[in-house]
Figure 1 (cartoon, rainbow, N blue to C red):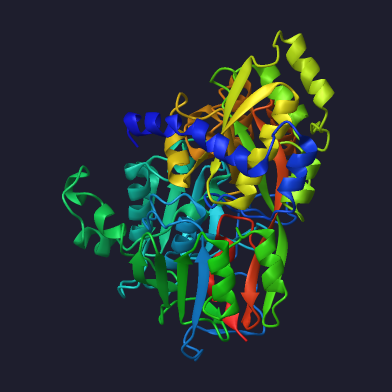
Figure 2 (figure 1 turned 120 degrees about the vertical axis):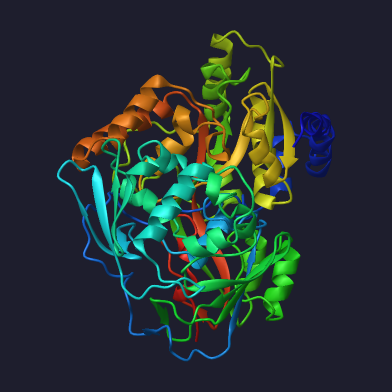
Length: 581
């Protein structure tokens, strides 16, 4: 987006706010507002996902291999499952399927099925062997040596070797996009070493406790296929590293191959017949994910049997309507994904901690949780309480308009002195109604709010600049790898700034130091103490309103089974889990 586009977008904010006010009546009247609000549902942002149930997020340091837990229904990949297609909906386009670039929930949904990482999270967030059948860690906790399983092949038929792993790490670090910063700060590509055809080692620059967990995002690519399809580029004899090719094709060894890709409309996958792993008995031969942002369309397609599974971002009304159908069920699972109002801490007037604190005590969390997002769980600070290292002593603000007004008065503000812009994903019921509630609540304490609905793509673009990032940004965020570190580093560390994950633009040397120390601490108990301290330090600066912890819902056709939740972004959409009853 150009500067001119951003300026034009901002000129539309006032009219957007007025149209919302017109729909819902006088924002100064709490009673009329809540009457208009009614009961809305979990629609939400399609850019971030993840979560988990109850786990402590501690990483394993050795493994003896093994896949996720197998059940009686599992069979080899060569089993006859018939010709079947799982038809899912999603709310956000697949911007890329390049494993060095993907960051949001739809992109990772594709990557986790097209590609294999070395390790894989189970339902508790523990790491299991995947392409790596086992691994060891050196005494100084800096060298990790992985032994690859035998028999794994890429979709091209090429065998998966240690050289492919080395190449994938080098490509990840050289392109320096996506989640590359998770490795680039601790790993030099020269220190990824091929020991033999099935053995590869990573020697870190320093001890880094989340290293294994971050490897779930290092998807291994077919070196030969990538180089055979490389175009001219900036990487010497590796050209463009196959970026043009992998933007629309796959070079993976995952359980499914890319069968079709219409970036704005849908993506389809077909089962890889020679996959090294196992599928459930009755696993789907094909999967199609359609981009559908309109709830009535989802309801219609589910009812007519043209859609088998909804996204997690439908309205409560849609879930209720579908649950009433005889051949459709709705399932809900708790997660560790938090819904945040991310506050730009570097831009006036929200650069003032008093303004942020007043907002925190001026917001009606119970209405948000019970009326707009029924079934969601209370939040307490930046880390959801399901994590074993959650700090139970964190003070979570409660709705107290009188206290909020006093905070502003003590800081020298009068009514009308403060105007802020609240940005959220347009066309999603939950996002809009949360924005309206925030506008109403802030009006009660003397803060004017301009509502600014935008596309998710625009929001991510605005986040790259402190100046362009709006004052308030409504965002779902959950673990992208199974460790508490993902909550702290990606959102609050200065080096991870200027992404949709870090729209707070928090720059605090003490927070950075605590996160860095936790990353270099091997002892789990000592690391837990650091995590507790960083939670308190973050919460006391009010960089966010912690609104609620999400319960994820999907509607399923009755013959669709196998959905398996894992506390890492989009790993619960691993297609070998799904089967037709």
